Length: 347
Image (cartoon, rainbow, N blue to C red; front, side):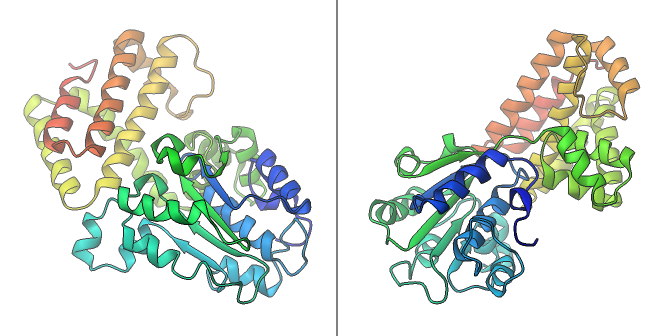
């Protein structure tokens, strides 16, 4: 990135960049921002760019990306920018304990904010970025509230959450909210082709990503992962053809994985399944625009004809409920057994 790069180097979210640029130029930036949006939509990158813009040696509303400060912030090696998340919390824990961690703890927040009252060491402002804010324990959230009520004038706090609705209301009320939404498919496609990916691959990855640039890039850059997704989707589609005994065995394997700390893999699998059935639903309804699985339209038509709109919609509700129940610590074996028993088009 060089001086004057359009949109801070982000894909989409131009309105958010413009809003933050105006705040910086007028010196009316908020003491705290809550940036929400789905995983891979660009929350962390926007937060990093804001940290750079507030401290860039060019002292402009656009971070240059090439000065020593911008480079150090990008590498998380700058004393006035502090970043914490479930990932950093797990990295500081023992392996067996890290696998069981699902919430941001009060010790993590206290360590992250320990020296917030100190003035900047090198930069113009101190920036504190915290990801996974929806996973704060009550104690951790209350510890943060004390800082949000009386923040130092030279500090900017940036909180990142998948959904603001899962964040304590008193925290939300003390922050300037920025809600990032999925990016237009054509913008992601053009961004990928601009990085020398073939047009067909760029269109497929943009469609698969559901408007999430980070996910599209991961698909494009990792053909092995793309093939793994195709295989997993084939497996999920094929469950409707398996016997009850085979389905129970499949559930038992996922239950073991979930209890072994692979919860994110199970959530990703269920989300993948949701995206498939959303395409089945719109295909059955006769409105197959903006399909995710643009390379599986023959399969979509076949399943849609054997299922119908009502059954597809009902199964989408089953999948949504399963994700909710798992996040609320329900028994994964029972939850997943219920899901496979409700699969439409079982023959």
